[in-house]
Length: 212
Image 1 (cartoon, one colour):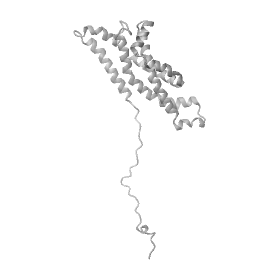
Image 2 (cartoon, rainbow, N blue to C red; image 1 turned 90 degrees about the horizontal axis):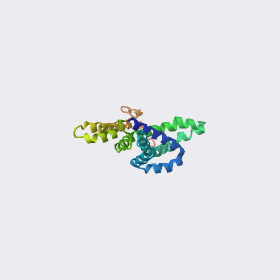
Image 3 (cartoon, one colour; image 1 turned 90 degrees about the vertical axis):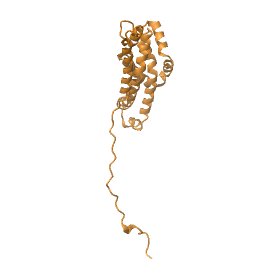
Image 4 (spheres, rainbow, N blue to C red; image 1 turned 180 degrees about the horizontal axis):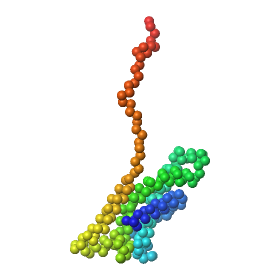
C-alpha cells in the first residue's frame, strides 16, 4: 500500500505544479491519459528492466493527467471567487493569495480525488507484478504473491487469499478516507415559535373611510 500511496501523493504534487503552468501541460497530459498502464509497464520494462521503480513510474505516468485536470479546474474556480479577485486591490501579494486562499481551497478536494484513485493504482501495480513487469523475488509484492501462489491455490489457498484481501481492504480504506469531510457548523435559524405578531388595532381598520 505504501508504494501506491506514494504514487498518488506524487501525482497530486505533479498535478498541482502542472496546473499552475496552464496550457503547457495539455499536450503531455493527453498523451499520458491515452496510454494504458500495462503498455507503459511493458515499454519501461523493455528500457530499464522489470523492477519496482519501473512499475511505479509506469503507473505514475497514467495517474497524473486526471489529477492535473482536476487541479486546474479547482484553481480556476478558487481564483474566480469574488473575495479573492478583490484581494490584489487590497494590497495582498500574489504569493499570499496562493498560499492562504487558493491552495487551501484546491488541495482538500484534490486529496479526496487521489484517495479515490488509490485502489486503481494499487491494482495496476499488482497487475504489473503479476505479469512479471514489476517487483521481482524475493520482494513481497501483492501481484507477485498472487503470481507465485496461483499454482498452490488448491493445496494452500491462503497464498492467494491474503494478497487479494489486502487489495480489497486497500480499496475500502481509500474510499472511506475519501469520504471523510470536516464537519462544518451550520448556523441555526432563530426559533420564532411562541412569539406572537403584534395585533393590529381595531381603530386602524377602516381609518381611511371618512364618516358620512
